[in-house]
Every structure is written in structure tokens, then in C-alpha cells.
Image (tube, rainbow, N blue to C red):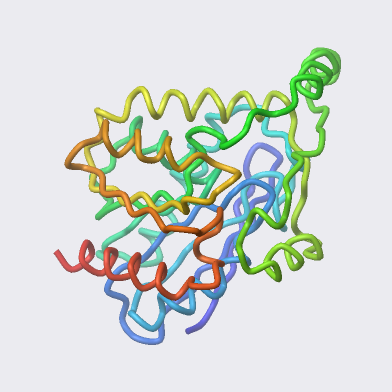
Length: 278
């Protein structure tokens, strides 16, 4: 496997991306949208696993994340995120012409991808994976913190607060949480505007799930304390035969970083290979 970096410059924002090219001719390629506060390099081991099955990977650090520019935790306009997915897919198609594409979103990335596939043309995709998607949170943010944030946000729209993430909620492998905290490219900030943008987008995706027109796999841990696995079940139920859901008993938010992550990666890879081979 080899890697190649790329950069987009758009509306005064520099977006950094990476292409993980397979050792052999790829059967398919995954275009991945990461979660809130993290960055694409946290999926290096996923890319390595996919490579063993001749699946390439393309991803990018979202605005205000990782090595990309932008204020940490504040996205002015939600629709910019959907436009960035357009750019991701265009880059993926240019790099791997005539290769089936799977669009994959984790957590906040799952929120963005779920909105994308319900609003945009998906004819270029072979399938979609939603990993622990932020359709609803598994908890209610503190009311006092939200009230303060709303008040200050009216004066300073870019004002950010701590997202109160407990790193131990990422995985039952607590080393994952420790590495997350120590990672200089990770941030723990969010603005009220960004929170409400994602919250409303998640609600919209649930309401419009019956319109889903592309085969979609949802994966979620039953012990996820960050995003709601019940919301994933609701989405799958509403989408009917277009959605398949796999719940991982006892797993937390990042199933791809769990103690038994090999089981999850094997399951997802087999699903992906099945779709790109059709």
C-alpha cells in the first residue's frame, strides 16, 4: 500500500486529504468522512485492513479538523460540508476511474453522509456505510451550557465550548481514549451553531429515511454513549429494504477501534466487497 496527499483550496479554507492506494488493482474504493474532533489519520489501520482485500481509501480532514485550516469546532454553514463530500467523490473518481465507490461516514461524518445521500444524486455510488452515525445523541447536552452558548453565540457566532467528550466512551479498549487525548490533531471544541446544525440535520435524515434510494449498511455498538444506536435502528426501519443494520453487542462509539475490531472490520469489508463486485 502507498499513500498520496492532496490539497483543496476553497473559500479561504485549505483542506488536506490522503489517498491510500492498494498494493494490487483495487476492486473498489471507500470515500471516508471522519467524525467530529478527529481526523483522517486515525483510520490508517482501517486503510491497511482494506488493502488486504484490494479496497482503496480516500479521505480528508474536515474543515477545522486535523491538518485542514478553519476554526476548531465551528462550521459556519452546514451545506459547505455536503459540498466537501462532492469534492471528495470527484477526487475519488478522478483517482480511481471506473472503480466502484462506497461512501463511508463515521459519527458526525455519518450525519453528513446520511444527509448527502438523501439530498444528492447517488448514481455514482455502489453503496454507503454509516458507522455510529450522529442521527441523535445518546445524551442531552447540559441545558445551562447550551443557554450560555446560545447567548454568547448571538454576539460571537464563532464562540466554542468543550464538547464534554469522555474519551473512555470511544472504546472498551481504554488505550484508544488515552491516544485520543494525547493526539495533537484532535480537538474538543464545538460552537452552538455547529451543534444545532448537526442536530437538525440528524433529525432531518431520520424524517426522510423512507426516501433512501441506495443500499446502506448501518453499524453501531449497543454501549455507545455518544450517538444513539436506537436512532440508527429507527433509520434502518424507516428505510426498509434499502438499509441493513448490524448492532455490535457491548461495543462503544468507535467499533473500528474496539477490542474486537477485527470482527467489525471483517463484517464491513465483506459487505463492501459484495457491493463492489456486483
